[in-house]
Image (cartoon, rainbow over all chains, first blue to last red; front, side):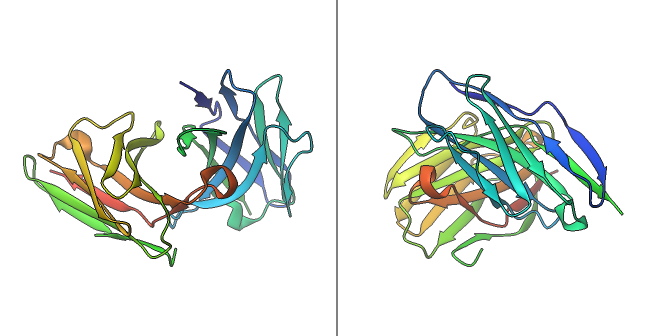
Length: 115
Length: 113
């Protein structure tokens, strides 16, 4: 079974700075999909960004971008110009390219943006 | 999210009692999921459904059962609640997880005393 590891339980950064959240995963498959979800204090789960493993280009959504290193099985999230509203739990998740439509999640990183 | 609702939002129950959580969707999505969220564990899959009356177990299914008699409703039942089932429970839906990921409900905080 695939596993997703987030090795940073907590992080904090000053407002306007850049922060990178780490995620590694383990799979023997060549095609798969990776996601980052944000969970603010409201508890709502929000999709931040998605990456297809067969695409070389790193995904970007406004201030959020990923560094996808397929050989290293690494999928880090970079938040630029961090804002107070970025304070949240962030979860990395993995999906196969075939068969079941399930997501496997990491344990999360609690990010605090300091004013 | 407007297309998926969970009820109740909060519940306190006693050990040994049965509990049913409800997930309702208006998106007509094929797939529905129940996860539990616990500190240090992230989100773990309890059960999921890939169609009406088609369900399967996830990684932490012991002590839980599910039913899906209609496309829009997915029920999670704790047959005899225990303190270890105190958690936040999330329902999620998808039509194509690979393309769109999940849409989540707002969660149910369940406390078993």
